[in-house]
Image (tube, rainbow, N blue to C red):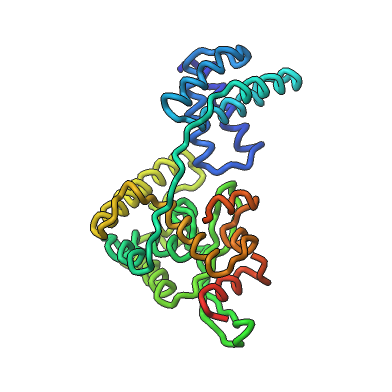
Length: 312
């Protein structure tokens, strides 16, 4: 890649970070797409050639990310607002229908879900899957949890007046927002605390509240290194989950790490029948996103979790 092309790519990544609310993983994917586009030597102003390029990637690679990456790259490079709008309109009109396989989430009973977690070989992977199963968290949000974002607390049930020990996990979500999930389950709460203590004492992890619990201790300011390490850790967890599915008698191709979230959404909605409450728990900004999972209007997140789990 020439200096000029490298500069364009660097500018695009910088512009995304400064002007768009996107997760690190999404930015990484968009930058990878635009790197391919830049290497093709197609002028972003040549609408016909751009369309041919997008069509090719959509049909043969099912790369819908390319379409959105090109739209953003055009926004950065086409300064004339009228031309930019014309470009967008033409690209939207002529883009191919993007084939996406409609995901049918496998319905699993509680015993089967518990077996999948138990069949994972390492304590770390068991806890990650356990949190995902119980709280419907994204894999990225869970695996990038920091020690400083785990706090022990107590909460009083609104109806019963009883006091419960809880664990609050402050997760960094897609779009770099934060949300808190609350662990009521005593076994899971103790498992997380025990793992954190073991990590610090036996694995000689540096005594820092800023450390990642489920990732290597890394410099979070180094985005490229962070992403590579996260991907490596995710792949190991992904493969371990597939192996656990086989042991549990489930076709590994029918279940992914994100299916924990889909299953949680269905179970939660079947209990409460309140999509607004589910939207709050899942941390979605739009109701449309929540509805796609079907598959909270409580006073606060702690009591919403408590009511759903019977700690009222």
